[in-house]
Image (cartoon, rainbow, N blue to C red; front, side, top):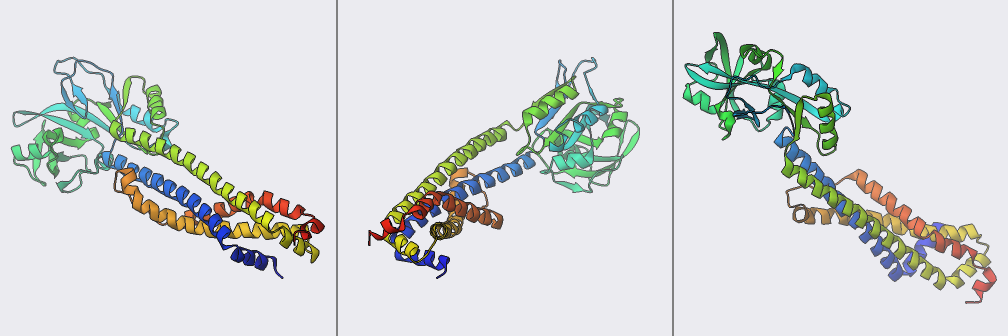
Amino acid sequence: MRLDSIAINSLRRRKVKMVFMLLGMVIAMATVVTLFSITTAMNSELADTFDEIGANIMVTPKSDNLSLSYGGVSIPASTEQPAMLTNNDIIKINTIPNKDNIAFVAPKVLGLTEFQGNSLMLVGVDFPYELKLKKWWTYQGDKPGAVDDLLLGNKVAREFDKIPGDNMIIKGKEFKVAAVLDEQGTEEDGLIFANLLTAQDLLNKKNQLSFIEVAAYCTTCPIEQIISEIETGVPNAKVTALAEAVRTRQQIIDRFTNFSYAVSLVVLLIGALVVMLTMMSSVSERTSEIGVYRAMGFRRSNIFEIILTEAGIIGLVGGLLGYIVGILLAKTLAPTIAQMAITIPWNPLMGVTVVFVATVVGLLSSAYPAVQAAKLDPAEALRHI
């Protein structure tokens, strides 16, 4: 008779104990899957939130006496020359030890210019990176990128009756209005955006930068460490972390993740304990049965294998059911626990991992009862018949 057949038949005869062990394993694995799925989805949603916000690190020059501002950076009303960053600081930021955690760097230069007798703030930007940073921007016209392209704020375009394709003469240089921003409801509506190098030349600020915005992959990056490295690389700059509300949520999610790991570990231990105690009880009840097997010529290794096969089957089935139940629970509970709209996908790799872990837990928790069963003396066991 095959050993696996003996194990299966033994489980069938002891349906109550089998269901008890299976239930313990399903609850344990379902809890792990539910918590892991929710925390993973929450971190993914947080990554999207950071992506929508854009920059989360601001690099500004150390200066005082500020007045007119954009992006949290101001230019003085007095004639005193403000402190400035330089184009070389971009290279320094892009070469810090944690450079792989930086998505992109968006430098800017600010200055006042005149158009038709009106003072306007001109902002020099690196258009490819600026548009990546401001993913919420929508505009009418063509994507700006040429050295003579302008992107007008909605208020500026309305005041001077400019539309995409029009020309503007600023300080004797002709520019093309490539696009007009849709109304943002912010100070950006009153700004003119130009190519960075062109704006530096136009404002007589060659190689100078007013501030730099940095976008980092903040679901995995060490923000404090990146800030420290930038401060070391650019000592004349003040480095500030933005999006504090979202970073606070990240801290909450980290705490919930740690709590989930702790709960998962406890539940796994409880599930293993349930299997072990049930198996020990089963071995005690099957003393005479084991004695018959030994009398029939079964070796100790055969008895050991029968017990482990039963545990392996419980672990395999319990892991599969636990994964299914866990995903369904996560889909149901995630919006309430996370307080945000998140999606819980079916993850085949997680399913395989859960089944494997459940099987290993079942085998390990049944190792001691299996050893005890194998050690039973045949003559002593037969006395219980």
